[in-house]
Image 1 (cartoon, rainbow, N blue to C red):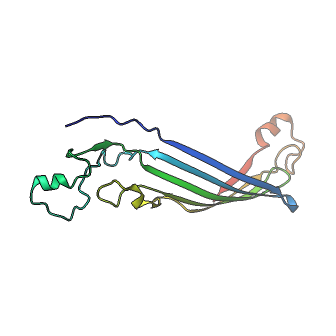
Image 2 (cartoon, one colour; image 1 turned 180 degrees about the horizontal axis):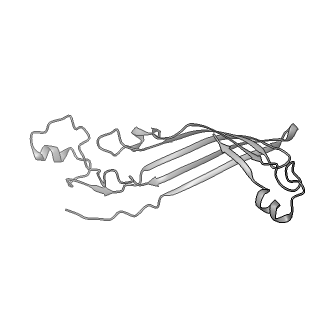
Image 3 (cartoon, one colour; image 1 turned 90 degrees about the vertical axis):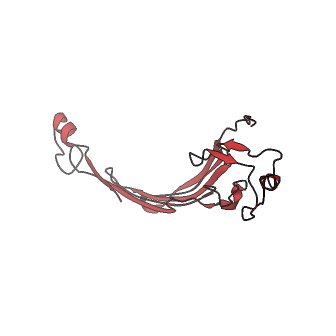
Length: 185
């Protein structure tokens, strides 16, 4: 048995984005953007701790002897080539983002945010040998591709300069003024 340590590969991520924003008539603001991320050289994240690279490429064949089986291995004369946390998992994320915002006098606002996301990558192997990770490249599970977020803020008209308690003293204004009601959906 030969024990060797391969050079460690450091996983990394690349992120990028671009957004443009425009003020529209009637106090609306529109933002459109793109965001992306590319994760490279990721390890297997706790799935199988070891991967045997020296495995029979045709598991359907039944060999008559151990010698015949050994002869089918790609790395000779070794019986197994184990790799721990082999860093070939990768993902790429692309997202379109859009937001429409409206601010009102007095501090109230309404916001709508939309995002469409697509994440592709390698999560597991379809090939039993595990030596061709690109065979399972595709959409990553457990992602939410479409997301719409609506929110609002309503500034309560209480305190100095507002409809209610306009002439309140300093202490009353500090305690009762400046409150907002908001929600997210």
